[in-house]
Length: 318
Image (cartoon, rainbow, N blue to C red):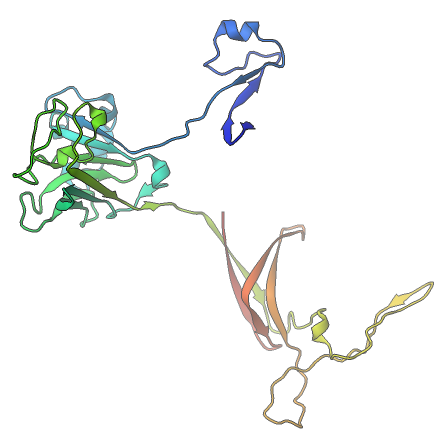
């Protein structure tokens, strides 16, 4: 990949083979000299789209492709059946996976319809089975009715609720530009569909994503009598001569250094019996060939006495 400025793009160099991008035609490839670069481009944007389908119309191939997916979820709710969806008036909201990861979290989808800043409708999946039920305003038209379903793994929201959310308000929601009452069929309606703008209507779409992260769990044990000696300079009594002796044929370190006794006692003038105590602050991870491949650092050092058996649980996200 070559980067010019801040925009990356894919490229290929013409060599002895016939490899190239499919956007390069035969004549351009033939006229290029060895070493010439063919470049392409990456898609840099991703957005949530909203598509409307009128009643009885031949469904877009995008919606028909979801037929088996809808029917596979009928065990959760009969609202997923595609039989009626094939001919009814509906809206399909498509959410790219970059927004939610592996799947949309069940029960997290929340749709709000506003007129001049006032909430006239809210859909939630309180049963966590994919049914979008109108939960607000309480007692309003359509209250407790199902207005659509969610495909959590695939990132689609299907809306078919056609009841009026506000009988006193009219706006040009439809593609033909006809003034109609707000309904869930017009959720996320914009001028991109060919109709006029809807200045009094606004929409809220909230959801949460889930992403499964593989982890490795490891245990490191410090058993009784183990890891109670340290080469740290603070392990020995301060003030001792630690200078090693060396000569033309030898090098030796001090063998009779006194270990610092840190055993607590309530008496000021009485020295408690010596016990070798260390503080474990890091844990090394080794492969089968004894090569150090990682280090785990403890938030706080753990005290290790000679009679202690300690097990550390390590988790590594992949």
